[in-house]
Image 1 (cartoon, rainbow, N blue to C red):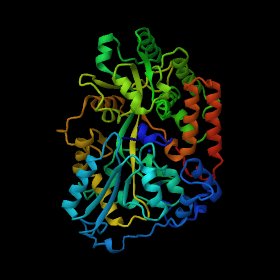
Image 2: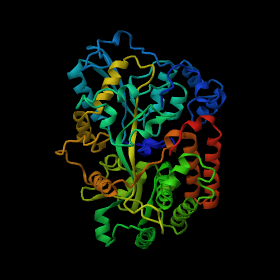
Image 3: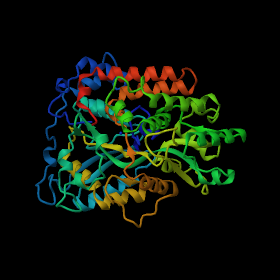
Amino acid sequence: MGSTSAESNGTGSVGNNGTGSAGNTGNGDNSTSGVGRRALIKRSAALGLVSVPAMSFLSACASGGGSDNSGDNKGETSESNPFGVKKGSKLDVVIFKGGYGDDYAKAWEAAFKKEWGVTSVHTGTQEITGKLQPRFNAGNPPDIVDDAGAQQIPIDVLYKNGQLLDLAEVLDAPSVDDPDKKVRDTLIPGTLDAGMQEGKVVALNYIYTVWGLWYSGKLFQEKGWEAPKTWDDFLAICKDAKSQGIGGLAHQGKYPYYINVAIMDLIAKKGGLDAMKAIDNLDPEAFVGSDAAQEAIEAIYEVVEKGYLMPGTNGLTHNESQTRWNQYKAAFITSGSWLENEQLKTTPDDFDMKFLPMPLLPDSALPFEAIRAGSGEPFIIPAKAKNLPAAKEFMRRMLSKEWSTLFAKEANSLTILKDGVDPGVQLRPGTQSTVEASKAAGDNTFRFLYTEWYSEMGTAIENASNELMAKRIQPKEWLKRAQAAVDKQAKDPASKQNRRD
C-alpha cells in the first residue's frame, strides 16, 4: 500500500501514504540537526517508539553511524556493478505486506538472485515497528525495508536519530536502462520530495499514488447519479443516498488520516498551492486566519451535521469501513490508489471501482481536475545494514523498467519511474481510472509534505479530525488545534531546514 493507506499511514505519517528518514549518518550526535536530545526523547516517547525511562530506542540510536558495515559482503566494483555486490552474499529484506502484498518483492528477489547470486532473507509483515524496533535497538537492522503501514516507524524520527542512509549515491548512480543517465533523472518529477528530510533524500517513496474520493460505477449507474464536480453536487448525492438508506460518505474512523485526505484536498483546491505551502512551511496563519482552511473544515462538518456519514463509520477500521462501502452501504469513501488492491477479496466483480478528484468549493483556485498525487510507500536502507552494496544495487534495480513492470503485474499499481511499466500490463478498473485522472490533471497536481516531515504534527491534526467527525468539537476548535500543532512544530529549530518555495 501507499505511504502513504490506512495501514500505511495509521501513525499519522504518509503513506505511503499513500501515505510517506536518513542522511544524518555521520554519527549519532543529534545536535547536528538542531534538535535537543531531550526533545527527541519526548517526541519518540509520544510516538510510542520508546518507553520512559528505559528509552532503549534512543539509546541504541545514539550510535547512528553512516560507515559501510558491509565487511565480507563487499565485492569488486565495475561499470555494471557500481556498488560492489558480492556474489553469494545474503540480503535481508523486510516488506510491508499491505494492499500491495509482497509477491512483487519476491519476484524482485528471484530476479536479483538470478543476476547476482545473492540470496534474500524475506520477511513480509504488517508489524513493522514490532518486528524492527528491537533490531534497530540492537544495531542489527535489515538491509532494505518497506517502512509503511499503521505500525510504520516514522521517517522523521529515524532520520533525526541517524538511523538511515542518505540515498544520494543510489540516485546519482547510472540507470540500469540507460547508463548515460543518472537514476534520479529517470523518475517522475517531484516524486523524490516526499522522502526528503532537511534537503536530503533518505527514503525512496516508490509507488505513484493519487488520493481523493472513490465510488462504485455500478451503484451510480443504478441510482442515476453523476460523478460530482462541485461540493454542492456532492452533498446532493449524499442527501439522496441518505433518503434511500445509504450512507453518503464512509471514512476509516479509527484512522483519521483518511478524512484528512478530504480536508486537506479541499484546502489546497480552494486556496491553491499557497494554502498548501503555508501548512508545510508552518505559517502562523496556516489554519487560523486561512479562509481556505475555514471553508474546507466547515464543508466537511456539514456532512457530519446533516447525518450524511455512513452509520458507524467513526468506529471502524479501514478494512471494516471499506468492506461496507464495497457492500454498497455508502456512496463515497476517501482513500489513496492502493484501495483497489486492498479490497480485492471483498469487492464484487461488477462493482466498477472509480476514482474521483475532490469536488470543488465555490471560487476554488485550482480546477476540478487537480489531484493530490505523488509518491508513497517509503523504502529505506538502514545506515547499519550489513550488506550495503547489495541493498544499494537492489534499490537501483527497483528503478529499472524490468522491476517496475514486475511490480505493476504483481501489485496493480504504477511506480515513480517515467514510462516504467510495459504497455502490455493490464491494470484493474480502479487503478486505470487513477491513470486517466492523472492524465486529465496534467500539471495540476499537489502534494503535502508535512506528514513526512513532521509526524507528531500530523498525528495532532488527525486527532483533531477524529474529534470533529464525532461531533465532540466544531470547526473553530479544529482550526485552533491544527494551528497549535503547527505553532508547536515551528518552535523546533530543525524545522527551518524544511522549506517549500
